[in-house]
Amino acid sequence: MNETGEPLKTPLYERHVAHGGRIVPFAGYLLPVQYEAGVIREHNAVRENVGLFDVSHMGEVSFEGPDALTALQRLLCNDLASLADGRVRYSPMLNAQGGVIDDVLVYRFSPDKYLMVVNAANRYKDVKHILAESAGDVRIADVSDSYGQLALQGPRAEALLSTLVPAERLPGRYYSFLPDVEVGGVRCLLSRTGYTGEDGFELYAPAGQTPQLFDALLAAGEPFGLQLCGLGCRDTLRLEAAMPLYSHEMDDGVTPLETALGRYVKLDRPGFIGREALLSAGAPKRARVGLRMKGRGIARAHYPVYAGETLVGHTTSGTHCPTVGPVAMALVEAAHQTVGETLAVEIRGARVEAEIVPLPFYTRRA
Amino acid sequence: MEIKTDRLYSESHEWVLFENDTTATVGLSDFAQSELGDLVFVNLPQVGDTVTAGETFADVESVKAVSDVYSPVTGKVVAVNATLLDAPQTINEEPYEAWLVKVEGITGKVALMDADAYRALTEK
Image (cartoon, rainbow over all chains, first blue to last red; front, top):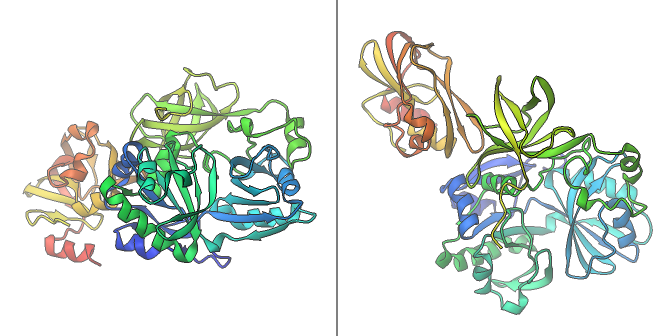
């Protein structure tokens, strides 16, 4: 969304319409929720083969200057001091109360140059916070509008990309990237990351050349049966992999320790915003759990969760997932997080039993 | 988009196939299933329940959302298509075969359209 509330188009809007995408407003952008294949087939294509998503709505904020790392270390609760050039790190960004302002990826180009990737819906809120909380010799810029982004995801993503890029120009390790790789005549930041629970890549390209990149990937993907994928299966894929979604599993009033993101919080590292609040709060009072429906019914986001007759929390995401069936994630009182315990989800007035199961629901075969 | 000419349609995209003046089967149109997307769950009334024209009598769920199904007629449910409970995708595959309920003793109905009028509605 722009600051007047008009939905924006990504550089690929015309491509989505031409390919039969069903367009919906999402996080201020007009994006395809699905194409003609439908959510289930698109989901299965990513699990079994390869799919292509437009994720140009994601925001990008650049940090440059000798104090870039200092600024990031104050803003983020993970530790970026050990991040090497060409590597990517995930981190929550907290407010002073320890709540999650956003969850972000940080790319390190050099010791004084970084790129932070933020959620589209949080972009303006994030930038305001970042600018207010940063000092010293660092230039911070919202460069979201200059980037388009594509996600090529699935077990055959590497084979497909190998037809366009020499093997030595593919980032080999998960959460690594190369800053300048030519793909189909377009110079991209090529990153081995994703939001699907599968192997795959994310490609950041100049906004104006993103359609050219999209066409090149689509043409190269034809022999692979590349599937165009919409937001619908992006959500089912990330839910199966238990990847959190902002405003569902976390928000400004939920701490990362409550929502199973503790491994990204380095409490022994002084100096980040939110640390004092997390330390003084003590043991988290809530926990994020996985639920598998035992009775007939589909839990959606924001349904009440009961232990016996006691309301103990609410679902944060849920649906009938193509690979793993009817599951949900929930934020519940910390006393109710034991795998095997039976809770109940209130689905439009009726309580349906659900068992606490380990997260993630789905792990890809190594 | 297939629209069968042997039956009538409601504004909320249910189809009604009358056997006689007081007996009909009810289902979802091809347009409805296409708009809903891949269906993964169906809730149906029970035999013996009364349904009321214009009121919800079932719900269908896609991966993305829950949608109510409105009864085009008032009457008593005498059969439900229980095979849909385990195979809701049948509604996507064969919307005009995948009936939801059979209603008898029909005493009222919502405004219904023939195939031509319904096609005009879906093309608006």
